[in-house]
Amino acid sequence: MAGPSTALSPVIAASTHWLVRAYPATGGDRVAPTLNELQARQAITVAAWLRYPTPVDAELVAMAGPGGSAVLDWRTGSEPDDDLAEDEGWRTWVDEVVVSWAACLLADPLLAARAVDAVAAAIPPSRDQAASRPRPRRSVGDLPAEFQRLTAPDARERAAAVLLRHPDLLEPVAEMHRDDLFYLLAVPDGRAAGPTGIAA
Image (cartoon, rainbow, N blue to C red; front, side, top):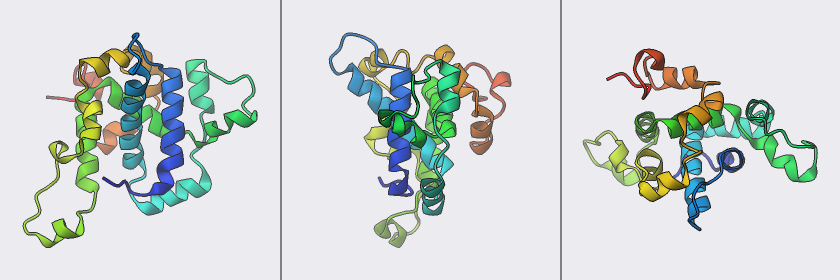
């Protein structure tokens, strides 16, 4: 499934890299780092598509830049020794809002499912789909299996991402822009809706 634009690729790559550095894989499984990164990338991808839903949005952020990781680094105490060092340049492509939204999704599978559904509903139909009538609304179940690691991780994936999915550890990042995500997804205030953040 294609996203709004390939212009988001640097943002998705850098934001995923930041997230897995801040919340590394857990467990002794050799594939744990890969499973951890795949879950982070799915969350970042959904968050990026929500934040930049059209090719124009994506092209604009590619030209202007997403803002960088400075505030996120400060929030998590992970500031680099020298943020001007050549090998730290990737940090300029980190999107603070995208990372915060991804943290929200990783901490709450129900919210993640809602976000994926919103992304699916916004993706234009293919030419074949457009030719058929009526066209049903897309749902989470119609999305590629890649997003199932975000919305329904199995036991091995959960074991690899204990830190990445821990609500308390994610909270300093998630709280930064959670209200905007709730507004976008029409989710009631999570403080009044219980631990999942979604009212029944």
